[in-house]
Amino acid sequence: QAQLVESGGGLVQPGGSLRLSCAASGTIYRVNDMAWYRQAPGKQRELVAIITGGGATNYADFVKGRFTISRDNAKNTVYLQMNSLKPEDTAVYYCNADIRLVTSFTRNYWGQGTQVTVSS
Image (cartoon, rainbow, N blue to C red):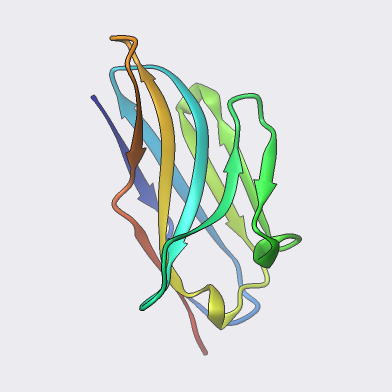
C-alpha cells in the first residue's frame, strides 16, 4: 500500500505565493505520473498540472505562467509553486499519483487535500 500526504496550504493575499508539497510513502517500487488537482466550493475537481516520471509537464491554461510543478524522485515528492495567486485560485488542492508497488500492482492514489485561500 501507499499514501500521499500534502502540506503547504494556507491563507495568502492576492499576488502572493505558496508552495505545496506532496510526499508518497509506503511499499513503493516507482512513482509514475504525479499531478495536482483542485476543487472549489460548488465546482468539479479540475486538473491543475501534471508531471511524468521523466519530468515532462503540462498545465491547465488558467495557471500557465503562474504555477510550476516539479518533483524529487529520490524523495517521491511532488511540488507546486504557486505565484501571482488570485482569489479564484481558492480551493482544496489534491495530490494524485500513479504508484507501482513492490507487489507489481499499479494503483492511483489521492491525497487528503490541503486548503488554499487567496483573500485580502
